[in-house]
Image (cartoon, rainbow, N blue to C red; front, side, top):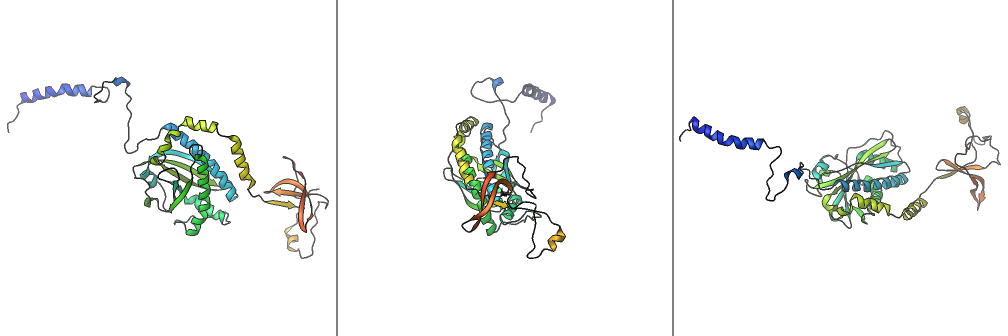
Length: 344
């Protein structure tokens, strides 16, 4: 093998240097194309192939607005079902890969597969144990004080109890999607370990709607995962313009009638207070059968009718068909002060 002398090396370097200067001296990346175009008008953006953005910002905003309606309806439904105030709000709405979504979930958790009658594929609804077990405790008559959150899958009885909550959630989800497409959702499977469920490949794009559920002093998260290929047929209807147009043309009278019909079937507690007084603990301890309690309220004074612990009516106590009865005299005006302890 022959060796190059210094003159030959210098000539080779001199032939390469101008090309390097031309390459390094360019102000932007080199673009290779067969068609002629103005390079100054080309917009160049970075693209991450691991996290492809397949949903536009307008569609994501429409999706968030749609599920804000779902959150309000679901919170109202749970409040009536559990007889306590339950707040549900949308905390985040983003797109990611299915693998990223599953890796961020706890184990065990309540992982439910959802299927629609008009969409191909499955969605999943994950509810954190931090709110699942307080709801179960509430259904069983507990107070959620010093409640221990077990780190185990739910039992068959617990799953049966929480199915009533999930049923109301799917009904609220159907109401929210009704303005875009009438859908009926149903749960097809339950799982405690999200790693064992693969509804789409790990690198498939999914939309994740993260919700926060708060009940009294307890709070937890709820995540609705919607694969892109499931709602791809209706993505054209999920633009912000079409969404707000649907909201503007929605029949307000029908909504009012539907809410009123739901309220008509809501149960409320009604009680009548004849009279009340105060005694000491010593007097209470000495009470025996036959003793009398004397109040400052005359017997002719009407009783106060309470509806869910709120004074609403004044009524006369009597008898109807051999049963105690209360005939309403008048309603208590808003802001009217009624002494419900010892009325003169």
